[in-house]
Length: 232
Length: 273
Image 1 (cartoon, rainbow over the protein chains, first blue to last red):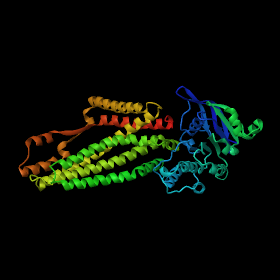
Image 2 (image 1 turned 180 degrees about the vertical axis):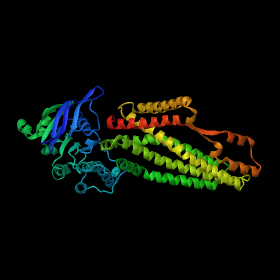
Image 3 (image 1 turned 60 degrees about the vertical axis):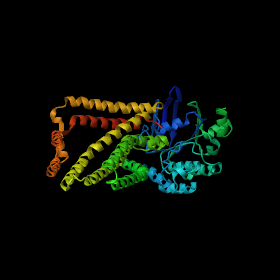
Image 4 (image 1 turned 180 degrees about the horizontal axis):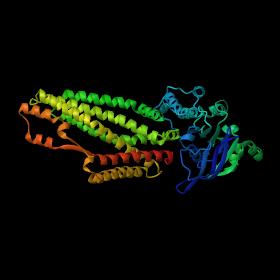
């Protein structure tokens, strides 16, 4: 399998605090990586660095051999943990705007996802509830056949009853099979079934990394149980 | 192409306020025009002139806001995640700023001249020939002022957008970093342009007699026929030239083009979400 993402001794410092300190990682095409850790462990920082929304203090990031920049952004989709869509736009305008920048945007997939998420396309983004807003962000991210998909707390605003349906939809029928995906979350139980690999981040460093199945076997428990043990 | 998509987004964001502002300016002009002859001579024109000054201040604030809005509502996450170059992002914002405030200024200038001429029409001592001469002078001045106005808007826009971008490169003291950048870059450009004016050769000074700009000959002829010409005024107009120093203009142009590309580079390589 070819490597989509390569991190080499990645470091990021904010003032005197190291948010990330020496991360080495390779993510292959088609792989789903669970990026797990408590608040402040460096998950969001890591995704921002990969997406080109922040700059590393040291180390190297390569996305298909390219450093983060306009070229890599054309192949990277990110769902940030903040509401970043223009509030004055309607849902339809937001889809049209975002899709116009990406060749890999699949309009048909967007339409199906909008139906799945029950979003009214003529509603103004600023009038959407928090849950709806989170769903719209998922639509805009998952409608792309991007080589690298980064999801930061994708289930944060989604009610528990819908989570299962949405998780399986984004991980299976709506996911482009060739894309690598990194999902940062602390809602481990709802999503752990789709992880191929998991990486536990603790104070900006890798606490544990490996195949999800192998770790389950080794620790004789679910990923959530391992999460509790690692961060106890 | 990305520039056009980003420019269209800026237009879509402000389209309602843009149309409403144009409607308000037009309504204000019609109202003030209707007050000509009812209010003290000069007041309607004065109100419009003050409005132009107010819009100049608004323009300065607005060019900071067009970047600030992105940060205020976390939209910079979206802006910075798009596969676009820094110069496209800044260029689209600058182009929309020039379009928006250029339109306001052109409209306000035209409205001011309409009202001014309306007032002039009501003055007994201004006959038809003199009125026509004043109208020609007013519209000529308006036409000549278009390019300098757009130049000043562009320079202001670039300096303000660059200052905001510099402010966005730091996590703390954003305001001070931006303010120092704004005052510093404008100050340096003023200083350098003044210095080069001292040494620039005479052929670099492009001058135009004020009499030509105002088509003064026509006004003078009309005043003569009216018997109301002032020798002092004629002498002043004929003896005054309006000029620019090409070298100083070049310094400003190089300065703000340089600032634009530095800010574009910062936006693409340094600014973080």
